[in-house]
Image 1 (cartoon, rainbow, N blue to C red):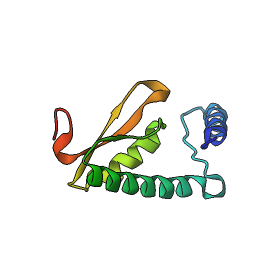
Image 2: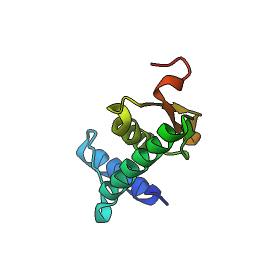
Image 3: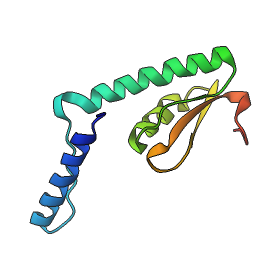
Length: 108
């Protein structure tokens, strides 16, 4: 689900290749362009949710997502001066929160 099998396979391949080579090797798997499609999906989600935050004037919390996916959302919205983002929670439960620019606690 959401690339977890691909991530596990990538981890195992990296371990095997690194052991065989005697040094750390990083290999990135992208089966059927999953990563690119997921990035496109997250970009669209970030933009739609930012629109919702702008219209409502209230913050919005996204579903939990891995660090790499949260990073995509943060980067997509970094240039938008009408909203800011932050991450809340711990471990696998970390979520991105999108705030209206004027409404972020401890705001920037």
